[in-house]
Length: 350
Image (tube, rainbow, N blue to C red):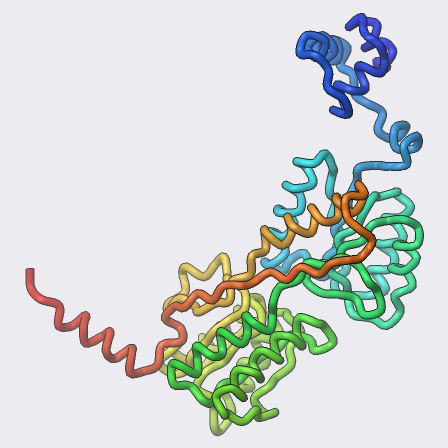
């Protein structure tokens, strides 16, 4: 394997010039740059990143630790973070905790041993945060993503969950619904609590009582959406609408609708937090709180790299990203459905 010394000899330049061309740390003339690149191609040279990292105490490696990599919300977050990292000369790896704090501890310990420069973390719930405080004390930059960790002051990029839930439930109320059930995520998690808070605020604004019997706690997974959806539909006095706090649980609710022969929105209106990539085959299309996942990942990675490179002051910052409410047919009241059907039947002849 060729060395940087051999590249410098082939290009007839100094070793420092070769390093500057590879790293982009200093400007090198176009003529010398082309000579160095030609020598690199001729010798098939690849920089020794391990040796370099030991010398400069930086690996240019980042890690993203997520609670459930199968959740459709996270791939776009990964993509946004990965694109930003790549543009700024860093490599991003991902790991999945399956929402288990013990697994998170093991992953974070492994990442420290691999000498990553920084971690993007959507933490599992747990009271023991020593693995995170130890990581920060060791000089590894940490940015929380989607949820914060109580007891740790660090940069964070979060969604405005309260606002998203409140706007969606307000819309359902404006459509005439007063009996609105909610299927939350785990209330041990910040996202679950904040979305429930938005639901409650919208009801109170409209002078609608918050009834505990219409608040059902799920866990952001398909099975809980299916189970709780069936429970709602089998009640003697059913709500007229359901607000589901993530897309994966909504798929479970839709399965319950199918099994029990429920037509949406004729028999039950439905809205969801998370746009579903598979939404287009569903009729009617779902009213949805859309999360800017790519933007969240990109901004979090940018903040993490800025922190690593010393471009930020010591005070951590929390960035809240606004979601967007997309109104579709699944929250139409029966009167609107009837009106649309009448218009279709009375179209003028051409």
